[in-house]
Image 1 (cartoon, helix red, strand yellow):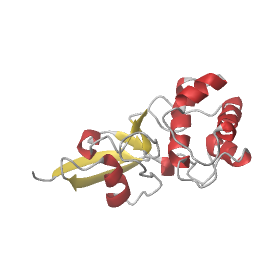
Image 2: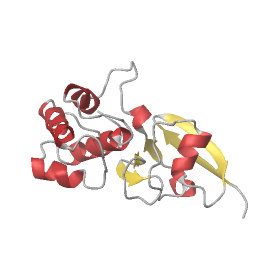
Image 3: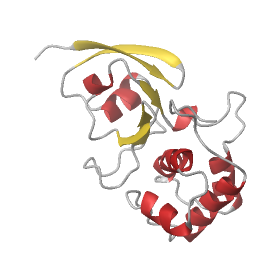
Length: 166
């Protein structure tokens, strides 16, 4: 197998690289682009720590090949906060509600919550629970995370149709 060129937009910036066909998107993001906020936990798609927005859709980057992202737009956790560093309402709510502890799951939870709120700006508690069902957290017990997403929904947190954070 030979390396293939890929070109994509990551967090609003043009990015490109040469990747082997079986390189995972999570590895490309972390190793080639040095965006280490995307965490790799289980490497089987079960924990949600590696979740990114791919053309606005929340996907597990450990289950996606980098070549599949050629021509795509990706938002990682580094692209969620405002350009001036102001926290996104989901991030602020997690901070306010103590919805994070060790922080390993937090990037995937934030990205998942942003996609959830884009698709359902006023989710019920049950919808939030279902939306987070693919994100494992071993520290918080989820209640503070759920309360944080409810708080973010109350202030109108969402992402735009193209997956960028609004």
